[in-house]
Length: 392
Image (cartoon, rainbow, N blue to C red):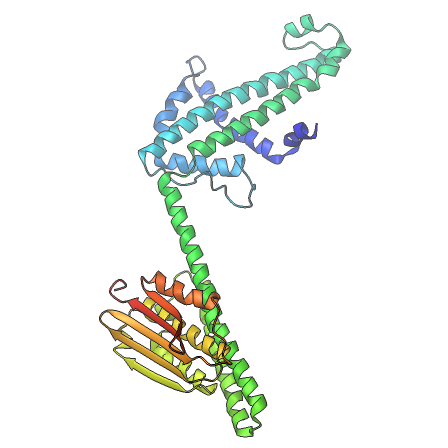
């Protein structure tokens, strides 16, 4: 019983009822203008040229979203498109939808008038009045029985409305649904959103992770050094690293707020000195060699190279501590070569295949390059090779 009565109490049932009765207003207007002219086939004929108008698909889609599927997901139903017809296939599907809608309108409109009138007549007979049709009194001579049967046509009408509403919703999703081009566009937009979300997650992981690692190393060294001068330098380095982390966080938040972030929203290899200075402040002895015009490296490659360098130095501080590090950055032969190496000792822990190393390899792969991480001849090496010619 609950399964049957549930749709009768749902607001969507009555919004669908309204949606199905809207076209009858046009038919009623036709009847008032030319009541003696055959009007029944005319709406179906006019539906063809009207449905071929590109804007009609937009109007029908909006009506269907508002009345056939209102609030089912808290947002417009993505299975029903609300956009002008872009192809002739979309136009003819709109024509087919209008024909289906008119058929359902006729079915629901006739049932609404006839069954409502029948209920009124049953109530009239039960109180001794004369019904509007003779067959009712011929069929039902007992007045009290008419009173008992009065709710039956209403229940039949509501059940019929529920059924026709479901048919109309299914037809709208099939005939007004997104075209293959619209589905492909939506899929591309969704893919771009996911890629952007993953990139922002990597940005936060690299910048904040690096800052926290440097701060932890500096604090530990200051606590065990017992040298006021060294402690002061460590605290200054922690302060500077924290400021840089806040700057990186502000950059990421600015990108989240802006739909079209500026090209300089993220740091590049031109700003690599601040990473190297931060590592030196943590007690790391840096052997740095940079060759080639870093300022001419394309923006995407330079930004990803900066993050690869940042993650590599973070892994050194996290797993090996203040050990000598060799950094090589070269721009030559249409490629950016970046290498970070540190000695492996008995006390140093080799990085596991965590999110940091995966992030390095993913960044290189997204640019069509490759990254190699692992031990080699007593050193832990991160080597990334990124092409420049594909980005220009």
